[in-house]
Image (tube, rainbow, N blue to C red; front, top):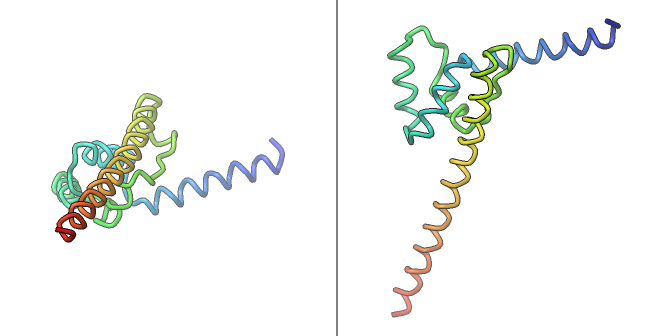
Length: 122
């Protein structure tokens, strides 16, 4: 292996370590958070459940909120191949969940404004 490829590999390893440390949660905790978001749990309930089940968890409420958006990367080295594929599938579902939730919220807002305008006219 030449110096450049060794440098790139080391750089990627450093990034992976830095990002996993910043996440404060394990890969399994990320999967758990994704599962509960899809079950429509609130982030505070997810956080409280994690802390009750594992008081030594390094997760903070803010970390749970960040992870719940789907913007939390888990690396293949943290999980088995099956679990990593499951994580990727869950992550896509969480993104879709938030997109659909936002679209529904905007639809309801528009519907409310239309009804309000109609009531004001009469």
